Length: 396
Image (cartoon, rainbow, N blue to C red):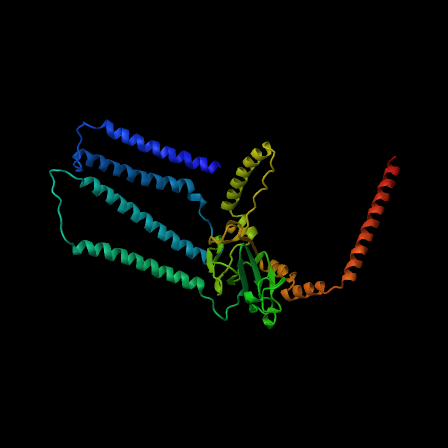
């Protein structure tokens, strides 16, 4: 009902404005006006100064944006190839900024200098080989250099030697979560297919494949510092994108195919937390959270928890309503800590066997287990009550 009333009010306002314009037109009847649609010298001067004003606005807003939000960009990369990516990005930004300053300045300067004047006659020439060569050859050379540098960076990042010692990990994307599968001691991922998804085998791993017997499935991603990690990515439903912002890595996860990416982490999570810029950033975030918590507590709400930095794996494609919440914690460990963490994990084959054994457990055994558990809880409650009574007597 409220929406209908709002629509009616907007329609009535539109009708009222339309009537007001008609009344204004009627008031102008009899007035002498210039309807020639030809700009006068005064009009051209005004337009020239407006263009200069807009040029000043562009430059001032650009400088303000750099000063105001320049600190929000990603800082130190946490992967070996990240330096190369940042270098390519910075060169691109510098070129864009220089070209923007020059071209916009010339555009508005010429618009002002050669503005319309009834005493001047426009000069027209069909073509200029010199000008066409300048604005064709220079951009071509600049773009060629950027493209060649980009291809060099891309090949260095994406190249994985088949004989290279890497850790094989699969990233499985689905609305709206990530799951990781480690290749195990054989360092070969078992085959998988979405048609094989059943029970706790949510990744559709082919358990008849010998290479799948030592695969480990986890919901938190751990990777070792200084070791190349080769990610193979699949999607169960729609197009996702595996995005590691601090590692400068991103790759689409496409249903029906496997994509891949590899990088070498250079900072453990604890080391990255101790970088000066990150300490300052976390302190600023927690300062804002403390201010917000004060407001929440004053209104009867719950205070916000302090922020602690963690690497994240995000989805960089709008994959649905909960896209914003599709993320996985990434922990970079030392090689020793990584081995210890992975050694405690059970394989997918063991998990499937455990689930199958639990499902085949006789009903009477389940009931017996429940009854014994209830008896244990009852005995424990009686003992606790007696202990409490004795304690009171002793205190008296």
